[in-house]
Length: 361
Ligand code: NAD
Image 1: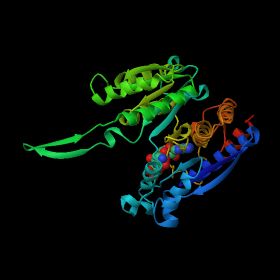
Image 2: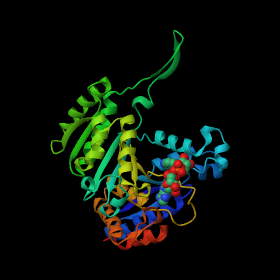
Image 3: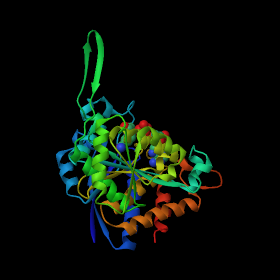
Image 4: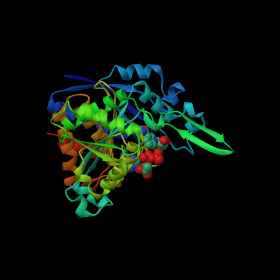
């Protein structure tokens, strides 16, 4: 079976970490019977250097023709990079926003996994985190407060600002369906987070999610108010499987959840549209401070590739094998510098990729 994967290596550490993820995809393919063909795509600073713009229409069309896209990170050091002398619409990040829009990526998935071996990086007490945890935040990405009408006016001499939070039932339904589908591939639990005691948009959210739930009798649904969820994430993160929520709540809760796992170099992410297509990338940035040194942690990108195998490419067994290999490498005591602790063996980016490949079975 052939998988056609778009690859955006990007800027900074991007090329180093994506190279390792490709190595892992190829190794898993040898074991699980698929072959990858890669379409190299330019985005961000790398595209500015070649085309003068952070994203071309041709790149968008090529990305759309792929089964899924794997991305490193884009952007440079805002103080020193010439990319940031350009007007904002021509800077690297503008390309990222544009490709998300062009590909209609409305669902953002951010897993927060605490591995037992990395529990020292977690700021929570051991009695809360013992045995680790594994939850997934599904955030609506293209609606709500960040995309509603806004204005600032003077009313009776007083400056007043308005931001409107709007969702229609179709926007809610399509992300709820995504969340239930993903819960089915996990522990079959969805916690829908809202503020239904105050907001109309949340009351609509809750009722549409309940309608969708009827088609998923095997998935358990519960509702939680966002203020309670913020507390529960630090009180008992193990209770969650999939957290489904709107844009702004998801923005805040996903950062909270990643903080409790401790390390940016371990955090994968995915953005999905209505089809199986998705864009998969590490949560961290392009880390210009360590770019080119061969010391970046490739695991977030490798875990993003595992998500791509599972959610876009229907290669669930290969995805499980990659995740297991990451876990084994950590158990065997190998660490990149960012997650290094006493008694472990420090390795560079490429060696970490090799060690993970060796453990794929
Ligand atoms: P950053 O995430 O790049 O770096 C923050 C710190 O984390 C740095 O010390 C860095 O060395 C470290 N770090 C990040 N990823 C790591 C990894 N895989 N292994 C080891 N250490 C790692 O954040 P920043 O410095 O604020 O941003 C740098 C650039 O990245 C900016 O241009 C920013 O716009 C861009 N950025 C891009 C994305 C994206 O592509 N989606 C996301 C965030 C930031």
